[in-house]
Length: 175
Image (cartoon, rainbow, N blue to C red):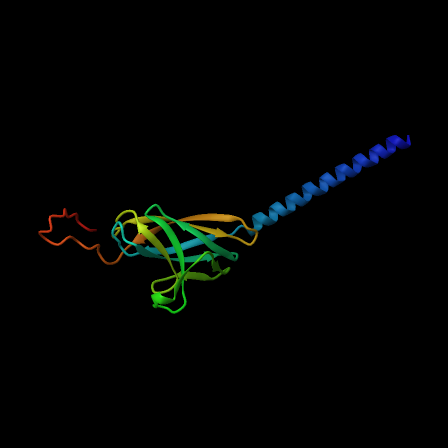
């Protein structure tokens, strides 16, 4: 009978440990879900640029309910997207590419003209006035979870350069 009882105690402990592990996993899972960031991207825009341009800048306002880091960006319109910090506003000499960009909780973080921005490198196609260029921003939260957020970047501003008359190049209307 002692053997049976001992076996029962061991089984009960195993079940208890399994129950604790399941409960702990559920709590951790709910904490991870609770910490998932709500990220909103607003007012995304850029100037028109021709295919083959070395770079074009994109700007966007970012809001999050928790602290997150912008860690990556991609677009089919360019070979890569750099995250650029500017130390002195309007001074291109103070620009540096960074691997992460902090977005504090409950504030509006602005990647803006003449300041911090996204640099679309080696444009694959013309981006013209009135178009929307898809841009995916990836964010990492405090627990290491990655969230990808799609925004349509509005192209507006100056027109693309047109070929000189008589140059023989075909012209197409610029929107």
